[in-house]
Length: 249
Length: 244
Image (cartoon, rainbow over all chains, first blue to last red; front, side, top):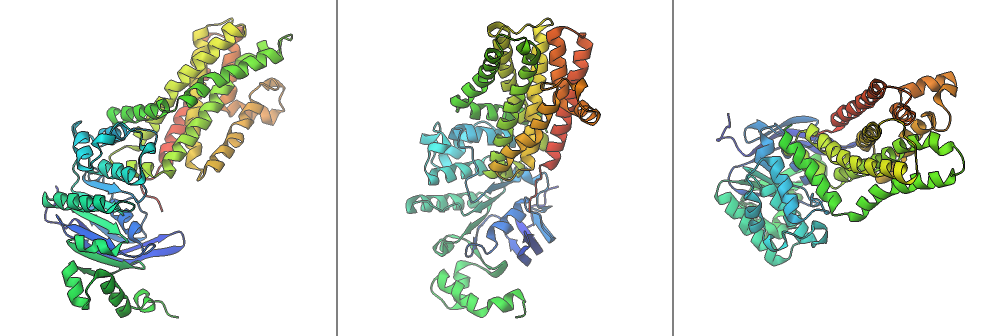
């Protein structure tokens, strides 16, 4: 029943509005399997809304979102998609281990999985501390550890490296690539352009639209620039805002 | 929905409460202190004997309403609810897990309040103390389930606290503690017949005076139970996996 040849995520003509404000206007994008795909763009460009639609917690106006061959939010996907929200969604009044034990029980994952994800996120030493007493970076790693439970096929991570020191950031990116090497698909958002080089593929997003979908090297070649920030600026120059959104002023 | 997930949720909520000893003490002690204060105020009058049983219904109901509505609202606001609903947790698992956990706390709280009222304040109970406790627990679970429901319609802590006077005070005013329900104006009496707290107070007064048989008390508890089921079902309908 599981279609293994389908892409990790396939979004077609997606329209989403939050409140009265249209956030995504006919967005189409595909995320391949088994690689780390970076979703980059400035704050407020619709990254979180797109990720929420892929996880299936966002009310959408129209368009289709297919995840691992199933409609986004379908019941079987709740075991197979790990989601980390931008703010750590964990219980401050429980210890790290108690948090993970609860999420593990909800997922129906084996008990030993808790120790595995503690080691992966380098939290073994903090396991019996209350989450409320941890630093911001540690809290967000607890949130990430929760998403790794049950080894999901797709990880959707909303700005997982915000507020982390450079050493930890490098460690996390190494972890992401280890996960991809064993077949996990990852979609990682960031508003920090210098993280782009760590991704296998890049989606550059601006004002609810995908400006580019390429490898980091391909993107630099296509725009004739030497870094991702420059590439992004070059792309913006090619797509003035009014033209891209189709609005007439 | 599975028993494992429901129990895991109840266990998680109880662990959270366990890390907050001050809340536990307040939960267990405050209703008894208030009942004690009331007994003291009316020490030379027969008033405590008439309103005392009603008070046993009141405090667990109010406290459980507040605690539950605020805890569940916090879950919505910190993003953990969104996380849980993107996982294979049934909505019923969450609501029933909460009801179970706070229901257990309610048993402890009601036991302390009943014990204090009877053995320390000298409230005379002609009927069965166990029956009295059963009604008090049903009443606290009612507070829990209405609190769960109220939290679904509140976006901020300020709003949820305002639901307390909105949903709870009318039930207290019409419940027969201030004025026996038979003496209320007709329209208000008919309204009070539909309110669950009225039945809780009727049942407690019947047990205290031993004026009715156990079947009558059982019937009143069933009415409270129907309200609990209604609030729990409505509460899980208002939980949405997809939000705007």
